Image 1 (cartoon, helix red, strand yellow):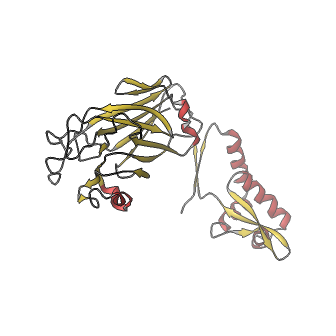
Image 2 (tube, one colour):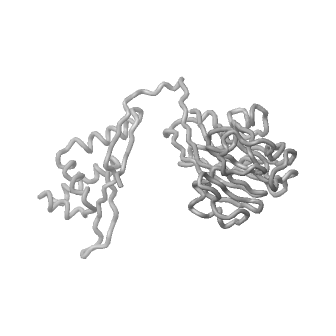
Image 3 (spheres, rainbow, N blue to C red):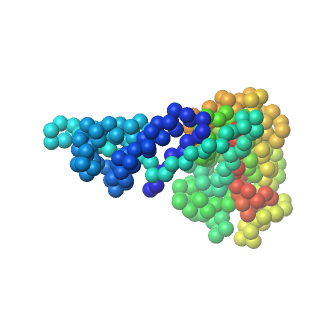
Length: 306
């Protein structure tokens, strides 16, 4: 698999190390040698007809630039250093960023792309090809086919998603927004079935919203013909916003967690959990709608402004 490394114009020290490492024909030949596989310093010196000390000097510069790594391995006469290529492609972004202009990163996950869950009957999943596994069978939530789900439901518990964090390094995230179509879950449907639905981001309880019902009195605008009447049909489009002031849902404040408290830049992913607390006043379950189901043609969307 190809290995990529990106540099920003502001990384002056790293770019200088890179330029120095690549400014020698000998070091470029070494990178070509290591393309086929790892070699120790002695093997590289022999292949390029160099003294071992000279080979070690060049390889140290390549390691300092982050292009290779060296690991000690046992040899016939003590330890030897094995050299391993770390980078195949280098991208240098020389465009100066205007810090006064906000940028946006957005990711969308299908409702079935959850990484963990805790569900209980009534529960199930349904997609374009029909039911995903058997209704009310908890083990079906661990099928690989769950990725095909366009709607999922459970009478209690939660589902958890991991979104890739594509915000460039050394940025400050100003706002996180989560958007999904959601409602409560009752057997068949009940328009007045309340559910206290909580949203956790990176393990923090950001707030709870009371959904007024499990809606099925009319068909969802996007539901396929295979989705029968008498089932849950549509939800409410929920917009969770976490900014420097606190947490809001559809414009109403529901919590005091701020975007800085989420520590979003400490991880390559953002963990989102949606569900009922065990001690919720209205533990009324959840339905989550994806594309081609409900009223809104979207999956679960995470957006970060930075």
